Image (cartoon, rainbow, N blue to C red; front, top):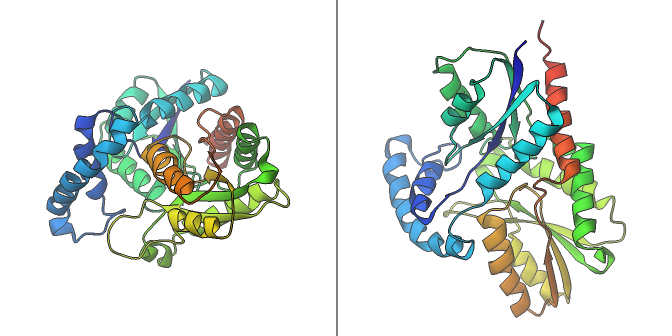
Length: 318
């Protein structure tokens, strides 16, 4: 009997200083993220990646010369594999750097696969993240010689009870004195035109925050967005502006919770830890605590397993 293939979909990150520019080129070449007119997208992406690679090199040097996202996603895959058992085969496909979808499929079909579950490492759905990864998967898979088996998609799990529980556990574990802190949730921002076209990302992110805060009665909180690129209007308020406002209001203890990330990468390790951590200190915030991403939190891995099993049940083979 064949196995169920599970593909963890994530953004990926450069695995060396030399990989920064090609990673950025792949990112800015994606029309689902940056809408440059198609005939000129690749040349413009090359120019942007060249300029930004010089600017962001410093981020990755501070982080040890690479993004840890691949290793952390692969560790999540190993834990999920252990939980699901031998009738499953769990692999990782990154969108903008190795292992690409093609490499993930090569690894997957070393076994006899009878169905595939696509499991994004983005809890909240956006066409720019989960949607783009799905499109890339189907482009590569349908153009391949591999057996064309049924495919199930996990669209989002922003309100899944075990995901919410994992987030709550994670905060309490890393900040036992949480009652004394203001909670600032930070999510990756998106261009406003994406939201205006009906993308559910903002609504789902707000719902995640609401469900988490039910477990922290009496604590004040806010939601900000980070990592804006380019001149068009993006989702606001920006996280750094909120830190400035909170400091002006006299907040002295700030807990920052990354809400759209489940692995560490430059947005958490550099933007949140270094840039915003230094900003908070300069503004007089006495205690700045950044909650780590979920990574292999056991409750989160159980949530992923439940999502796989649920996707299988909903699309049961005849």
